[in-house]
Image (cartoon, rainbow, N blue to C red; front, side):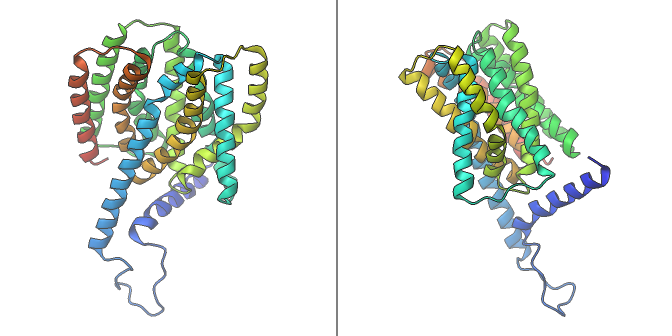
Length: 336
C-alpha cells in the first residue's frame, strides 16, 4: 500500500476509535465559540473511557476462555475426524453461522481496501492456525502445545508494534517477557521439554495467528468485531466447503458424542463467537494489552485438559498461575 493510503487509513482508525469514547464527530451550533464545551464534560469523558476499557477487558477475557477450550475440543474432534476433515468442517460450519448473522443483521460489505486486511485475518486465524494446530495435535498433547501458545501474547505485541508503530513502555515489555517466561517454563516442565515435528506446526501457527490477531484488531476499530471475523469466514467459505467435501470422501469419520461436541465447539465457540468478543475487546483496550490476557490461556487449557481429557497437573500449577496473574496485572496498569 502506498504511503499516503497508509496514512489515510491510520487517520481513519484513530478517528473511528476516538469518536465513541470522546463524543467527537458532533458538529457545534453555528456561531458557537471555539472554546465552547463539547457534548461531554471531561469527567464524563473519563468515566466513559474507563467504562469502555473495563467492558473491553471483560470481552477479551471471554475470548481467552473460549480459546482455552480449543485444544481439548480439537483433541475430541480428532477422535472421530481426520485432521483435514476436522479443519474443513469446522471452518465451513463457522462460515455458515457467520454468513447467517451477516444476512440477518444486514451488514454492509466491507470497503475495497478492507478486503486485503480481511484476507490476512482469514489466512492467519481462519485457515492457518486451525490447520497447523490440528496437524500438531495428532501427535502432541494439549499441554505440550501450550508451550508454544504461551508465546502468542508476546508475538502478537511484536506484530502490533511493527504493524501499527505503537511502542509499549519498558515496564510493559518487562512484564510481558516475564509472563511469557513463566508460561514457557511451566508448560515445558509439564510436557517434558521434548521437541518434535509438532512444534514446527505450532511455531507456524503462532506466527500466522499473531498476524491475524493484529490485523483483525486494527479492523475492529473501524468496523464491528463480529463483522471482522464474519467476513473473513465468509471469504473462506467456498474453499472450506469444497475442502470438506473432498476430505470427508477420503478420511474415515466416526461420529461420537465427543467428536461431534468437539467439532461444534471449535466451529461456533473458538472460530466465531470467541473471536467476535476477542476482537471487540482488542478494539477497546488495545492490541498489546489484550494480548497479554492470553498469558492465562495455557494454564486454563491445562485445567480443561484435566477435566475433559484426564491429564494430570503438578503442584506447580497454582504457583505458576499466581505469577502469570501478577504479570498480567502489571501489563494492564502500564501505559503502552
